[in-house]
Image (tube, rainbow, N blue to C red; front, side, top):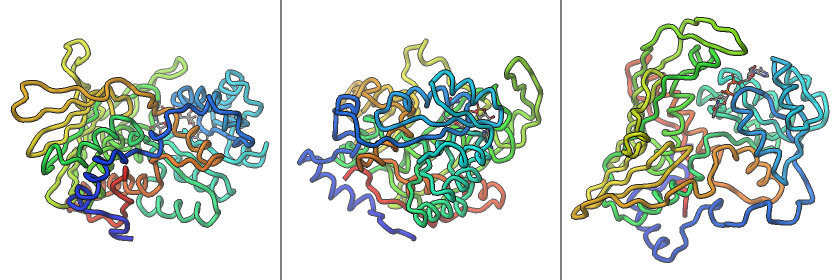
Length: 399
Ligand SMILES: NC(=O)c1ccc[n+]([C@@H]2O[C@H](COP(=O)([O-])OP(=O)(O)OC[C@H]3O[C@@H](n4cnc5c(N)ncnc54)[C@H](O)[C@@H]3O)[C@@H](O)[C@H]2O)c1
């Protein structure tokens, strides 16, 4: 599997500089500006069952409900009132309290997994084994071995498996990738990304073994940096627990829990050809009040010997890309605003792919590489070693 599909940065620059000049560098998802809602209704709809009806389900369900490619058939949650509440709000006919029940209930084609992180692998596996397509929240598996197993299982069953995050679908990602391809920034030696918050207050799983800040939020930055700079050769990382106890508040009850997953991580990735990048993430500090100060919150920066480029805003909620070059006294803003991208659309886009064959940029190979990098960080912390990667994905993403 090693190096399959990998193009080094130098060859990438040669190939894509020509493509950029010819105006042919476009993402599959960005190529069509037309909204699916403008087209005649599709002949087929994908019957969808959603498992995990907590916070993020409120974000996914409106997109799924308005997609012309989706028929929402079932909801499911081990807390039955959450499944019932979502079902009644979005007029979904069935609500179940386990995946077993959902799979043996009203027929569905696809499962959308929005549960606690620790449950993703087990539930995704069960859904794939039942022959269902799966869209999973991140990470779709906890280890590289688990991820590879699921990907192979999907192939064997003849179904699709895709997973969040979708940050490589944004116009800002495309702009940054195109700028790197054009060689405008010169030789890229390093990039850095960060994502921190004071941590979710609504569920304990974020702080329990198998959870943690890297799997919940650092994941966006790993996905972004490998998308921009290419597959990783080796990884090193350190993780810590800074806040040993947390207070969780939900449905009117408050409890104090012991933290057993990292809430502070730093990792370094080697993309080859001298390019290193790092990600820092944590649940133990929040970003300063950039919005109030008027200073853009640069969460991803790429540094070359002819210029720098900075993503303003979250990778999942990008606000623009600022570019600085020598001799220019100021940063220039490109690609301002959301520009049609929404991180909430991963599952509805997948349904569109299943109906029309239109491919988006997200792939299971990219998601698997993200999982391998994150699992390697944990292994690096445990063993004190650098970890070599086995997986790769077709890169560059935009040619
Ligand atoms: N909340 C957000 O804004 C947000 C944004 C992006 C991604 N995510 C991701 O979405 C996932 C869920 O996060 P959340 O914030 O919605 O958490 P949450 O606790 O609000 O929701 C998770 C739900 O899954 C249910 N659940 C757990 N195990 C289950 C099982 N075996 N079968 C059925 N239901 C089960 C829980 O009862 C709960 O209702 C995580 O992977 C998180 O990283 C969350």
